[in-house]
Every structure is written in C-alpha cells, then in structure tokens.
Amino acid sequence: MRFILLSISLITLAACQGENDTNRTVDMYNTSGDMVGTVELADSSDGVNVKIKLEGLEPGFHGIHVHEFPKCEPPSFESAGNHFNPDGSEHGLMHPKGAHLGDLPNIEADGGGLVDAELMLPGATLLDGKNSLLRGDGTSIVVHEVQDDGVSQPSGESGARILCGELKANSEENKGESPTNPTENNKELKE
Image (cartoon, rainbow, N blue to C red; front, side, top):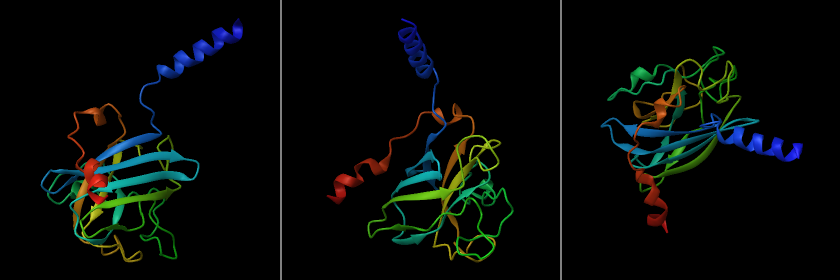
C-alpha cells in the first residue's frame, strides 16, 4: 500500500513541475520582425543539442552563435551583445586557444533558403551554473549574413546579424502568444 501511495505522490509531484528547463524553443525573427523559424534546445550530458529550422536565408553557409543578452532589437540586433563567453576565450571553433562557449558550427541554407540542422553546443547547459544559457536574464541566438571563418576575432568575419531569437531565463516570458511557425510546411514542400 505504501508503494502505491508513494507512486501516486511521485506522479502528482512530476505533473506539477511546470515547464521543463531542460528543453526550450526559441522563435527566430529577421530584421523586419517576421518569424522565420525556430531553434529547439535540449540539455544533455554532453552539452546542449540545438535543432534549427529556418527559412528565407540566402543559399550558402551562415555563422550562428549564442550571444550574451536576451535582446533582439532590429534591425541590427546589436542589443544581443557579444558572443556568450563565460571563460573569456578567443573566438572560433578552429582557434588554437579555444572558442567562445557560444560558437557553433556554420549552418547551410539550401537552394530554397531553408535550414534544417542539428548541432551540439558542448559544455553548455540549460540548468544552473557558469555555462548556463539561462544565466542572468538569458541569452540569444543570432544568425549572421555569411559563414564564420572559425578564427578571426572577435566574431569570425561572419557579417551582419540577420536573424535573432531571445532565450529568456524566466520561462514565463517565453510563453507569449507565438506566431505560427513558417517552417512547419517546408517538409511537405521538399517531398
């Protein structure tokens, strides 16, 4: 009987937990304020898995980084600050002195301007700690005009910031009414 009561209590407690901070979805916007896709983040033992679905990009490679503030004020998105870099490292995944924690591999938009990619942000977390993407007020995800060269300081010569999405620490702030996701139909269009 105790086992049944304990099981019921645990199930009830789990149901009352609210949003799980180990998974987040960030809506991405262009400089005109149009939603152009999403970035899904999931905490794992190796870091944060990053699933990217975007549209409307110029075909080719684009730099993508986590930036230090959850602010995406168009048209320049400079409000997002610099790359997320809690260790004070040099920029670039190919830099011999390490990389910013917010440095990600380039993403590639296909001929139709679509991106469907899965990346890993090693060492990062959505939980508490120095490497938390939710530390302070949170962070943002920024896509750049051209590819990141992986070594140039301070941001890999990746050009203008063309897309931005806010990852706010307070999960309630992320729950506003979100527009429909324009990338939901892209799979059907490709088939």
